[in-house]
Length: 252
Image 1 (cartoon, one colour):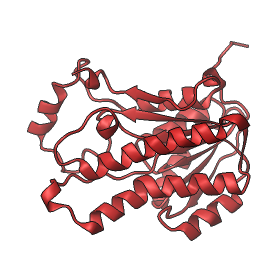
Image 2 (tube, rainbow, N blue to C red):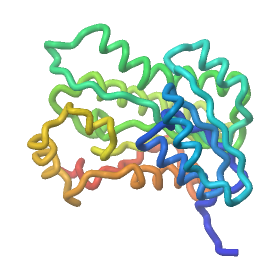
Image 3 (cartoon, rainbow, N blue to C red):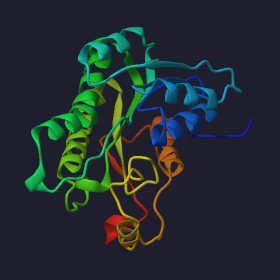
Image 4 (tube, rainbow, N blue to C red):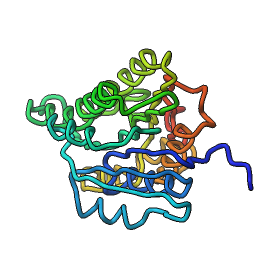
């Protein structure tokens, strides 16, 4: 047998926001590494598509559940039916670009509920209902935006990602003595529907690309590989870390 410190054999991993983009790619790669996946998203058709793409070659079983994680009752219902987890990937998120003078309470609350409050409450109930254990790895998708760099019109999104990074470090401190790890992955711009939704013009995309020494944006696969590392035992002495996967963007 080939030695592989990044294997996820016999691990059960929950991925939120699994209907597409980074969440889908992460789920696929976790399954290829041997994990059994539990997928959740508000988009049921996307969940089904992701579920159909998972690897079963190592005898895993996979499941998916539609859930609105901005609804606390649905979070509780989801946690109640979950097995004890070896890994969590809090990936669900939305992006909204708005200049500060045009901010609205409605948009601030909507983005914060999805990007920050939902992961906090999900983590709370996983702990409270004993769905995590010694050896469990919690991975939160934050962002280089806000945590390591700021940009115009990105106040709402950046604030949520700074918040999730601070929450991750708090959880790492609280749960470390129990052998439970928490880390975040902080991507630069990644080619997903989240950024290819008309919020950026092609001119803006090309201008932003000049900030990347590697001269390309990231792909969901780039991020999935980082998540696999943090879920695996290869990172067993890593906790409270904000891992930058940004093509060198924050160097500029």
